[in-house]
Image 1 (cartoon, helix red, strand yellow):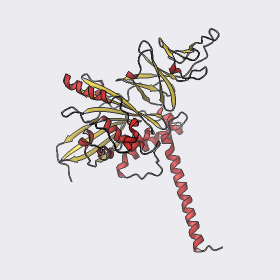
Image 2 (cartoon, helix red, strand yellow):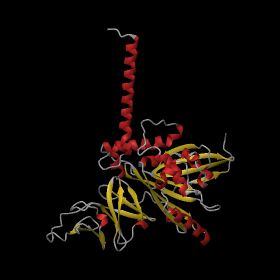
Image 3 (tube, helix red, strand yellow):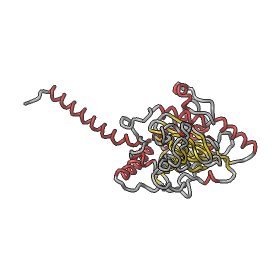
Length: 411
């Protein structure tokens, strides 16, 4: 049977469409696991090998409890009356109501519903309305916590928690620095944030939008030359810009799986640059907790008071609260923290709750994103095959995060 030209062209079109659909489905199957965070998924298992920021230390007072969420799990964070932080699954074993709504007694947490009480290890120690001594087999999950520089971290993985070392930075532990912590919750997947932190080109565009603050002014709109290398702790990102005949070199000592360690400009003219760690913490597949820790050198009482007043003023700012205004192009009148947050919010939330990595069109400027994904695919493949993942280790001698080289760059 011989097909006429019209039938042949129709068949070719159908075959092409089928082939394209198969290609897209294969790409979707490859990309989808990158954004997953829940237990039982390869990425969820990988992420549970690390400590994660879950709250600012000042957000939980002694004798108080609060709800937090991490990697799709609802948790009860509480501080014993002596000040030590503890973390339990946020469900009473009895009728599964929220434990954080109860009250703290010593280092134990009692459910408000029927008074069942749990110690810091999740063991039920009292059931007032039940037979005495019948609580021994009842428990809820408990998780290790660690506080570092005003941030509470948690470990949700199996077995003994690793030493808390990967995220430590010498600058944060120096005498004579002021530490400022803040957080925001955004309605999109964590990986969009992580990829953005390895996209140095966006600074030359996104952070010029609405208003050019001290960050956009210092980095400028010059498109950088980029390089990336894997380190013991994560990825070293280097962005080189030529500005007024000098070579500007900005480095991120990026820490796996999502920690961006950079230097940012001073808020006020003449001030020292600020060393910063930004963590993009997966609350679940569609929400991210952005936690920042900043170290500002202490100088004079007046200067210290001025910078403290600025960061105190940023305390309650969350771009999510200004969603409609930001997408209408109304950016905050602010030199640094609120402005850069707002600019990043628009581009990241603008990608949707989970970025569509099937229909994107990457270019040379996206080499940091491609670099990160190759590492993630490698680690996920190890997880699927039951093999060890990389043992990430803190960099002992970090890079100079920002500098100008006086020599004129070659054309």
